[in-house]
Amino acid sequence: MKLDDDITADRSGQPLAFVFGMAPWRTFLPVWLPERRIVQRDRSRFTALEFQTRWAPLLRRSEGAQVYVWGYKHPPFLQQFCEKNHIPLIRVEDGFLRSVNLGSTNVPPLSLCFDSPVLYYDSTGRSQLEHILENHDFARDATLRQRAERGLQRLLATRLSKYNNATDVTIEAVYGPKDRTRVLVLGQVDDDMSILKGCDRPVGNNDLIDAAVSDNPGAQIIFKPHPDIMHGHRPSNFSRERLAANVQVLETNITLADAFQTVDRVYTVTSLAGFEALMRGIPVTCLGMPFYAGWGATDDRQSCPRRTARRDVTDIFAAAYILYSRYYDPQAMRGIEFEDAVETLHQMRLQAAS
Image 1 (tube, rainbow, N blue to C red):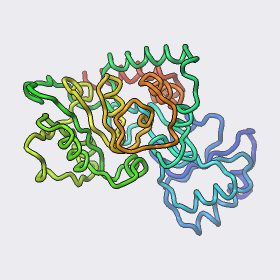
Image 2 (image 1 turned 45 degrees about the horizontal axis):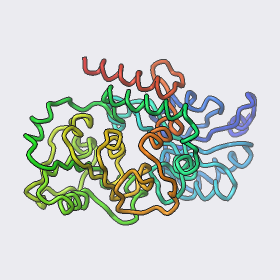
Image 3 (image 1 turned 45 degrees about the vertical axis):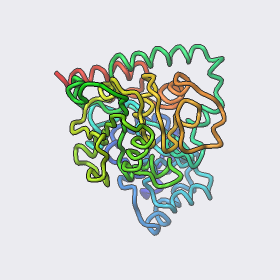
């Protein structure tokens, strides 16, 4: 039997998942997609000729097939083919509780998000997370609200974030004594896809700092660069030379739990850390349109007319962390619930610190 025939031969009764890219996670994919047989191509980029001669015929004759890609890392013709042939194109991205170390170090993720046609950080279209936030009746879902309230408080108590490799500090030693309004500016990687897909105009770290300085005359402005930039994994166009005198740049990657202490307001473009500030009751200004903006919980400098529902932090937390994300234990190799993920990640962080 030819290899192509072997791939499409249905011996298990499971439909196929054609996975393009995501090579670091290939060992774990069966855990995330237990209902499908996986056909993997390690690299996300390939020629149109290879696709038309090798993959397109397989996809056309594979009943119930789906295509999985990492974020938006795929050639345009793949999306065009899927749309034309009514084949679901599922986008995969890290969830909101990822790991101890940074994703750029290729450690396995504790949570992932699967979405179509766009991901949660893409405000150009309606993601499944946006659909949940717009349509779910949170007021009548008392059980979900209770889970979210308990989960949010447990997350704060454990001081967990998306990544958890930063240093714990005594905040006054970093910020100095507090004698005026304190504003934290959350830096991002300039070409981060959440900025490219979540802003209706070009916005960078310099623009973000300028907005915080302009809106808060006389305040202490603290700029926290993105961890990937601090660790040298990603480049940055951030310019120290143009900073106002009241802007302080953090030189060490401190935990968000510490960074938020004594802060009166937070500025971000689209960072998840902005929502972590909201979880702590800190007002947040968004220059872009992250998943948690547009619902009445943030000061928005960009609009999204699709988002008409009014949601509080508990609603948004329930939608994003409980209903939308998927979790699994990379050590036990099994799917878990949000609550289990929090405890698993907490133990991982404690072990890494010991």
